[in-house]
Length: 147
Image 1 (cartoon, helix red, strand yellow):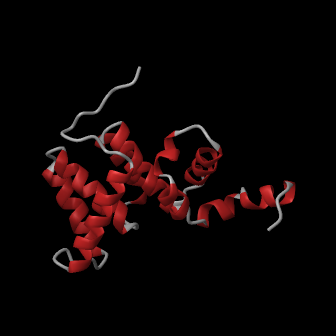
Image 2: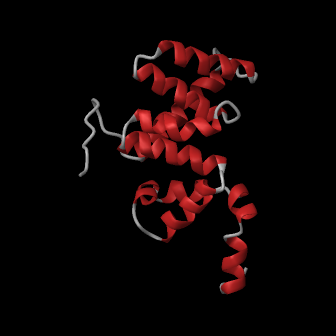
């Protein structure tokens, strides 16, 4: 596609933004989600139209910068249809000591046909851990609050 006004309009069309997969952009530079840049502007537009993948990445990013409660708030819109988001919310609830809410999330996963004892769920958990580390998650609950 050629650059220009028509190309810009096409790429920023809500129907395109809702379906685009921005995984490659996040893989390239995950920390760019929080930096003011063209990447962030495009990413936020994807979130605004309800792009499931963008909402997932934003939820993980916010959980590493603002705390898991904020991550749960963002990811809640993807639950129970998006497996990765549902698993992340369940794990975040466990981190907060909210076992009943976590059980509900895991039951929703099982209700969607996910075998919670399968090798696949462990691989999904590994992907979640890797993604959180790519957003530079703080260790030992050492979040810094910015004024």
